[in-house]
Image (spheres, rainbow, N blue to C red):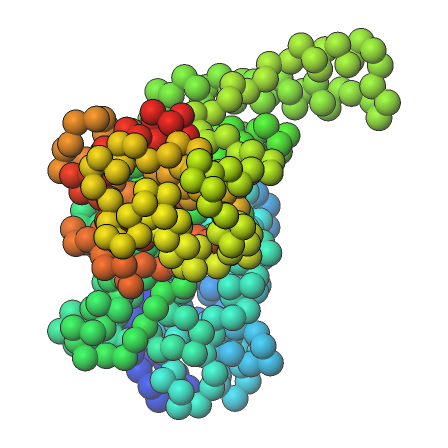
Amino acid sequence: MAKNWAVVIGINEYDHLQRPLKYAKRDAELIRDFLCNEAGFEKVYHFSEDSSDKQLLPTRSNVMRLLHLMFERPFMSAGDNFWFFFSGHGVRQNGCDYLMPTDGFPEDIANSNISVNFIIQRLRRCGADNIILILDACRDEGKSVEGIGRQTAEQARQMGVISIASCSPNQISYEIEDLQQGVFTCALLEGLGTQGKCATVERLNQYLIHRVPELNRQCGKPKQTPLTIAEPIEKSHLILLPKYATIADIAMLKNDAYRVEVNNNLELAKQLWIRVLAASYGHDMEAVEAIERIAISQKQQGSLPDQPSSENRAKTEKSPQPAPPNSTFIEPDAPLKSERGLDYTKLRDLLATGEWQEADEETAKKMLEAAERTKDRWLRSEDINRFPCEDLRTIDQLWVKYSNGRFGFSVQKRIYESLGGSREYDQKIWDAFGDRVGWRVNNIWLYYNEHKFYTHALGGHFPARGRWWGGRRGWLFFSRVETCRV
C-alpha cells in the first residue's frame, strides 16, 4: 500500500512585512482537509500561525527543523507520494527563490527565509519517487522585490520533482474576495475534486491553465497562468488520484512503463509499473508480471561481470522480455509517401523543430489536398471513407515520430477505443474523448485558437486543426485509420 504524506503551510500575517494576505491560511486549511478526507493521506504536517502546537507555527526554525530531521534518511519508497504545499509570500534575490516564513526578514532574505532549492533537495531525500511541490507564492505585486518562479522551475526539472506554480514568472497570484480564497488554490481543489476529476498531472495541468485565467477574468483580475513542470515526460502521466483514473490514464502509464523497460531503464520501469498496480488497486496482472520480470532482470544484471561469460550470456538471452505494448510503432525514418504525389517535406521540417501550430495547420492543408477538397475546406463522409491510406500513414508517422509517440491519428484512435469507442457513434464517448485529449474543458468544446501548442499538451491533442471531421464523423475517421492499418 502506497504511503501518502504531505507538508502544508499557509501564512497570512508576517512579523516584518506590512503586506498581510487574506486567504493564504484558509487555502492551506482547505488543502489539508482535502488531502486527509478525500485523497486518503495518512500524515499531513500543517503549519499555521493559529496552530496550538508550537512546533507547527510557520517560523523559519520550525520548518527548517522538520526538513532537517524528517528528511535525514529515506522513509518512503517507489510508489509513495510526498506533497509540499505553500501559500504565502515568496521572494527572489540574486537569482534564488525563497519562501517567506512568518519571521522572514525582507532586508536579509538569504539568512531569514527558506531557499526553494534547499526544500527540493531535502524532499528528494525522502525516498518517494513522486514528489509534488505546489507553490502559491507570487504575491508581491511588484512593490518591492522580484517574484519567484524561474529558479524553482529549473531546479524541479533537474531533480525530477513535479512543480506546480500558481502563475508564470513575472505574473501575480491573486486572492479573490468573492471566493474567499486565492484563485489558484480554488482552481486546484476543483481540478483535484469531483468537478475536474483530474487523476493525472497532465490532466490537472490542462484544467489549471484554463480555469485559473477564467476565474480571474470573471473577477476582474489580470491574467494569471499556472506553470507546471513535469520532466521526464513520464512524470506527467503519473496518477495523483487513483479513484478518478480512467482506463486511458492507466493505458498511457502502461505504455510509458513498457517503453522505459524496453530501453533497459529498469528502476524507472519498476516505479511506473508500481504506479499502474496502485491505480488498479492491485488487480492488474500485467503490472504484477512486469514487476516480477524486472526483478529477475535486475538480479541477473547484478550478477554479470564486466565481460560476460557464455553461460551468463545464455542466461541473459533466456530472461523474460516485456511483451510489446499496445501502442503506436514509431518508424526510425518515416517515409514521405503519397498516393496523390504530395510533398510532405514542410510538414516533416515543422514537426522536427517542434513548431506544433504551424505543423497542425500544414496537416489540415495537406489532408484537404489529399482528399481533393481544398476549395470546399471540409471533408464529407465519402471523402473520409476513401481518404488515401498511404497519405494517412505518412501524416500519422510524422506526428508520432517527432512527438516521441505523444501525438498522431493512431494515438488518438487508441485513446478513443480505450474509452469504448467503436464504429457506432456515441456522443458520450466522443465528449469523453474530447476531455481526454484536451479539446474539451469544463464540459465545453474549445475553439481552435484556445488550444495550447506545446510539447506537454495532453497525449493525442494533435493533430487538432482537423476537428472539422469531428463529432458524428469522428468515429468514421477512426474507422478509416483502422482500415488503413495506421
